[in-house]
Structure formats: C-alpha cells, structure tokens
Image (cartoon, rainbow, N blue to C red):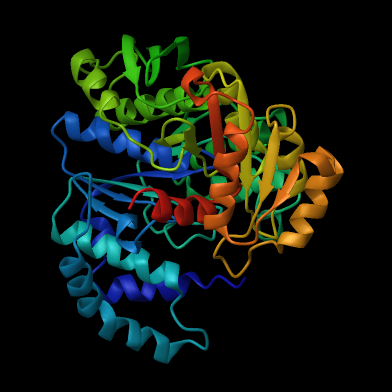
Length: 424
C-alpha cells in the first residue's frame, strides 16, 4: 500500500482546509475505536457540543461513516457533498499517477460536511494505523490510543512495538494522549513519541480507569475514575469489560478536551451519566433476537475475540451456545476459533459477502482441527447458516427454559450481512 500524503493534503487545500474549522478528538488503536468514538460523541452532545463523527467501516450504508449530532448524514446531503468536492477530486487525480482512494474521498467528504454544518468538535477514527492514515492531517489537540494488538501486520508491522509506532503517528506537538492499558511492548513507543512532540500522556490505571463494574440488566454499572474526579453509578448499555475500558478512555478524552482533571473543573456527573446511558454500538455483542438469543459481534482478530469470549462467559448464562463464523482470509482465523472452542457447543461455518472472504472449505478444515468433525456444520450461504445455527441451538432443548444462544461473528462484514437479514 502506497501512501501519498500530498494527495489528501492537496485535496483539502483545494477545499479550503475544512479540517481547520473545528477541534477534533482523533482515535487510533486495534480494537474499540468505533465504540469509543460513539461514547465520546454521546458525552460531548449531552454537554451541549455539536459533533461530527467519522468512523469506519460501516455496517449498512456508507452514510454511517459521516455523522452529525449523532445522526448519519442524509442521502441528499451525502450526494450534495460528493458533488461539491468531485471537481477538486478530478484535479487531484490529474496530478498523481494513482487516483484519490475511497477512504481519502470519504475523509474529505466528512471534513467538508463537518465544516459546513458547522460542528464544534469532530470525533475521528483512523482508517488504518495512524502515521500514514488520511485522517492524520488533523493534528488534534486530544488523541486516543485504544488497546494495540496484532492486526493488519502486512501494513503496520509484525510486532506490537512496530504497530504502536505507526499508530502513535497521530500524536502531534502539544497534544494530550489518552492511552488505554497496553501490552508492555507498546509502552516504549508511546513514551518516546510523547517525549518527541512534548505531548501530555494520561494512562489508564494511573491517571484514570475503571474503579468498579457490575453486570446489570442490559449492560453494566460503572464507577469511573476520571482525570480529576470519580463518576459513580454510570450505566453503560453495552456488555463486557472491554466496553467499560472504552468508557473510561472516552470519559478521559472528553475531560481533556474540556480542560477538566487535576486542578481543573469536573464534568457534570448527571450529564456524564446521561451521555453513557444513550450510547449504542451496533454489531458489538448486539442482541437482535430472543428465544433463542441471537448476538452479533464484529470481533475479527484474536484480541477482539478474547474480549468477546470474556464478556460471553461473564455476562450471559447460556445453557447451549452455537457460534456462526464467517471470516476474511487475511485474518488470524485459527486463533479466533481456538478462543471460541471452550464456549461453543457447536459451530457453523459460512461465507460473508466480502471479496476477501475465507472459502468455506478452508474455514471448515480449520474448524474441524479445533472443534472436531462432530461439532462442525458447513453452510456456504449465510441465510442458511443462520437458520442452521438457530435450529442447532434448540436441538434437544426446551426453548421455554431459556438459556439458548447464537453468536454470529468473525468479521464486520459478517455482522453487516447478518443485520440485513435479521433486522429488516
């Protein structure tokens, strides 16, 4: 992958540098970026801030990537923004051997839409990595680093340290970095980059964190240590310790933007509670059916699957769980299957709509090695696979007793495909 920053810089120059019209919180990391972005967005809005949010990938429509005040940009406005910037895109394309990429285009559209709205603060998630990402024109005053794991190694590096170095490229001079707890290998690149650009570093477990979490109906109840204050009895309608961690990171990011923290003013505890109570994160242990319970989860790497499996065991009491997996061929699918094996009674393997989808025969062979042939079921078409998984979950069981579940996972594309089928 060749990154030419001059291309996105030229495009934004032609547009009048819309990214300079608002403040920004810039997020990078391996897992948790989208959930954290949605939490930050909600917290800002409950504090009276007009927000733009740019995340990827999308589940149903590309318009989800560009959100203003919590709502996806309308079809009409999406077309208008595209038509406004299309002549500038053509000018850039005429200057470079490679055309403006899909991600560069949507990034420019987002920044143009945010400037025109106008928004006060944009919450922007990187597309890939950080240093060479098209969003790295922001030079945001507040940056967020969610947990770093091994993913996209072909682009970012083979070690946690190499990947962290790439992601830390979004931290620029004088910024504040809000860093989730990291593997030991990530610490040095974080500290070195912050020292290099004289950035302020706030670390989970030191300056902020989760003090207490308790499973509650429909989510969890949290006590959060912010940068200067403790916020108690915060209800978060999302499942898993990883989402509690995302909440702590998000709270600290908003505090940093507002100048709250040690020696500064605290946020309103009531507004913090309101902000978290309104959060949703589609495709993240999202319950879409009951009897049996059908959960959709976009975990697509071992770190993400670890968090999903932990949440399943801690917060759900399934008597019988069937897992449906469809994954991409460039992911560490074997490790994900090994993590799922202890919690799944049966597994159904299928294929999603991506051109990079792992062939069903290859996925079935991997699953058979880990689960054994008796527990593996193959359905090449996703609608048939969902029907098979539901049937297997009820096999030999009385649905009236409850405790039956289906987890559909393995890829964001898989979740997007399943949502179209299950949430019509």
